Length: 124
Ligand code: FES
Image (cartoon, rainbow, N blue to C red; front, side):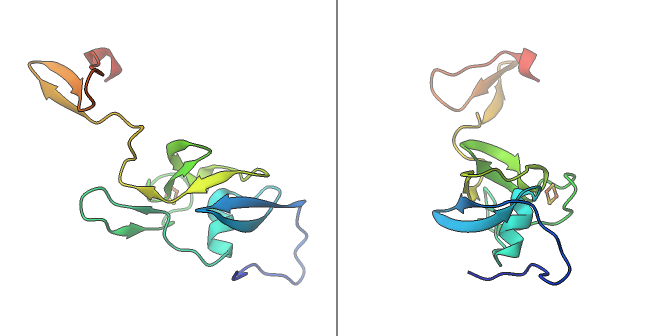
């Protein structure tokens, strides 16, 4: 595993591990999931829905949505805004992930593309 952290003169919190796509990565108390991943030399956080392009951390402050990952089973979680916790399970996100309902307008209603899961306009 690569370690891109500055080692000299930096005091860190408690050391623990998180799991990213099955790989154990070293994390320190107070670090975000994105910081842990970048420190380990990984660059791809998600793959785009249509063109399957890789995306990585861009703004680092929660504005761009490029760092969305599946964190502890929750898709579309911004890794740069999520503090790593011991045992945290992280997956590279592929598209929007199936847990997010894909909606389209049909007859004035917003309907999910998942059978049997229609939603009214109140979710807009
Ligand atoms: S890197 Fe931009 S929102 Fe996380």
